[in-house]
Image (cartoon, rainbow over all chains, first blue to last red; front, side, top):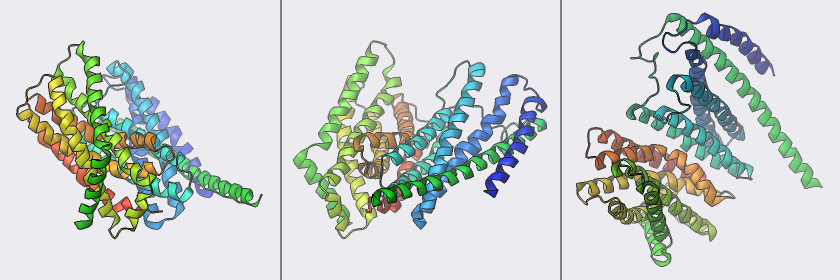
Length: 226
Length: 221
């Protein structure tokens, strides 16, 4: 309980300055105007939310296959759930940005398409879970599928650089153009805030998943006694 | 090598007797091509632009049909139990199934491919051989990931529905790379084709290795 409370407080403490910096502190970008500010939310959502969940899901699946401990299955399920929420949010921010800048909600460029594919893999993982009633079997087969799905992510990422893309190229990566130092600070703050928010929701979800499982178990026991 | 050969032989004998897998993939592939022809014929779009997409929709959907059969057949009659009792590693069982799936898909594709060339009025030159090569490489990737996914989906309540949901997102890199490579061959451009072929080969190698290692978890009771 203590960890969740600390994470909740930390994410509130960092979210307020992050929002202040995004809307008031960061300089307005020359060509895109205020629309560019969505970038401070979009990039952390993509990196922490979509790719972070992919790494966590991979760890969860691998952990289960090695240890056979159901706690890793809960871990994987929760990270996939986080992946669905954060990837969807990230795609939503991308669309809000693309409409005024590109004049269209969605362009089938590779990076966007692959992000949708990642979302579909997360959703497929859930559908698979719901079609497998047996607890042990579900954990095993979902771990195999999750592992295969996450192996897909780097291959997907690789094809981004080959496929001609409309997506703005990373400005902060090596070889990127670099940005205003104030923008960099804002992005960093936003990263910290969103990472903490993610950690808080994730830890919370893990606890709920554990309680759900206990309730399931107790229901089955009481049904067996009746 | 011997158990692997035995599994392939068993699947070929079953296929020769039932003729279910290849014929359904074949019919389905040709039907998809014909539907696309109806859809795009009047629009006057360039065949070399839409052709690769058409071809790979036909191939990947037909493959799902074949993959569904391949494992459902084993599970329906509890044949999988027999296979698991046989003195061979789980990984070998996987490789054997991949090999037979790959063989059936390739046979079906090699009949669909000339139909595609005829329907789109393309001449049978070097391009045909090039596309046939890419089909084999792409099919290996689809078979590698599809065989293990069909094992997973065969365990669920909704076997036939589940496989496409699991398979299509995972085979996106194969489809993108195969479509790009096919379109470059159809348009006689070859500057970037090696990169796409590397992705196709890399995908197959990665999935064959990972699936070989985790297949035992997918089949164990």
